[in-house]
Amino acid sequence: MANFIDRRLNSKNKSTVNRQRFIRRYKSQIKKSVSDAINKRGVTDVDSGESITIPKKDLSEPIFHQGNGGIRDRVHPGNDQFTPGDRINRPPQGAGQGSGNGNASNSGEGEDDFVFSISKDEYLDLLFEDLALPNLEKNQLDKLVEYKTVRSGFCAEGVPANIDIVKSLQGSIARRIAMTSSKRRELKECQAALAKLEADPHDHIQEEKTLKQQINELKEKISKVPFIDTFDLRYRNYAKQAIPTSKAVMFCLMDVSGSMDQATKDIAKRFYILLYLFLTRTYKEIDVVYIRHHTQAKEVDEQEFFYSQETGGTIASSALELMTEIIQDRYSANDWNIYGAQASDGDNWADDSPLCKQLLMNKILPKSRYFSYIEITQRAHQTLWHQYQEVASQCSYFAMRHIKSVEDIYPVFRELFKKDEKSAA
Image (cartoon, rainbow, N blue to C red; front, side, top):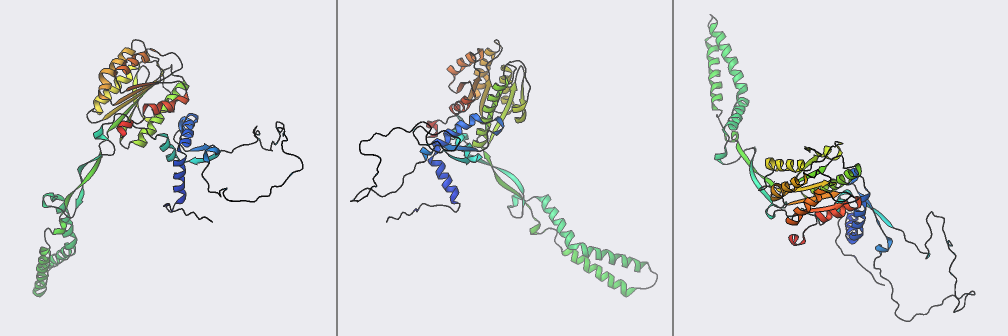
């Protein structure tokens, strides 16, 4: 008899620990299912959970069993149908078919797949594992935090230099009003009664003397209330506020011209939704600027970027010019890590494509950390692709990829934003 004791540490929520252990053990199979699932999803449900299917053959685990050592005596039952050397015919096709809907295996064997669901967070963690923004400045990583001193109300203790005179006097006045209000009311009543007696022609010497004595006592009590006390003092309070130093901005440029049919726009939207989920999940402090363009470019919000039906001709340089203006107005290259992603079908005015190349080379790429261009088309490449090829040959942080169908989106996305192993080390 052998007893095995599991002494691995486990939390109270045992199912959670076992679940994470299971996901780690079968990560390669799960990641393959996740990458396959991203191609089958609609634009609106890219970030939801997923049901993962793992073949039963991949779930085999080591087991403990009794070895075959030692001397054993076994009695095997005989048969009256076969003798040694008999040849057994193969069962006819379809034999052994059960009552289920599936077809029987040719070899007489079959395996059931194991299906389980992963949550939204687990799905996104696996989806964006080993991805990062390229060339992020080392002194501006999102794990580093700076602090600045900001005003944070008032406090009752502090150094004399931080005393707030106005706030302290307000507290003093409120305290003196609260402590002397009843005495002042009584004083007014006594003064009114004394004036009434003095106006009366009859003599009220004793009463007047008593009132005057009360008035003097009340005035003395009121005067004893200090003008300002120690607990009236209020000091300006200062607190340290964390400032993330990873200032990064991603410009998303999408062609919405008439040459972009609905299927092509859907692929572009899928790519940008994937990019948006990656950015907002991986980097806590990042700005995303959305620019749609046909013959004119316009900065839009997230809702309009993904769902607007606007269309028109194609002048790609309008989006690059608008991006340049926004960088100049709001995002200094000294303070921000600037990234760009452009999606198009490559169709553009022939005279405009050289201008796009000039804008990238002279104004955008010198200020950017990384710029990616994806062309979504099944046709031959147009002039914009050929101009951008010249840019890619001269600039190492400019990447361009070709997407033909939905199945290419995730592999291209991982290729564009794959973490650099050297920088990670």
